[in-house]
Length: 162
Ligand code: FES
Ligand code: FES
Image (cartoon, rainbow, N blue to C red; front, side, top):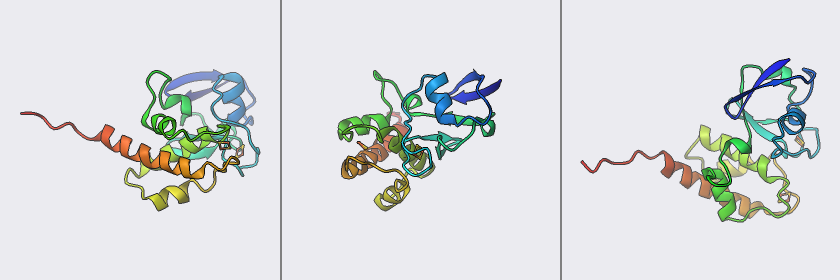
């Protein structure tokens, strides 16, 4: 029995400690945003955040994750109350098949949490490990640029009217 913290909630998991996180997320916790693409760390479809760092969940056994903070797209917001990253991807209509999108969002979220003023070049470089077979790269880039602005305005301190 292992305890995993996912999206701020603690879960007891019975799976073998060598099981990749991706399978536990999808099969045990029914968090299906992260996708299986290659299983080899070569496509990024399975990307989640672990302690704020973009991580291939297909390559990460759960034995490494006790006490760490795991975040998936489901932790970024809800259908009724999407977070800035989700809102930006919806507004730019970035998804075609959508298979790559959850991984793209999590890698971009990790970048913007670590570097709120990331340049367009930083975004391109950060997203390099994630592939999109549908070729919506330009919309994905626009989405992350939009998310950057939304996250900045969300974190701006309101000025008191005095
Ligand atoms: S499924 Fe993990 S990198 Fe492709
Ligand atoms: S939208 Fe289809 S793989 Fe990216």
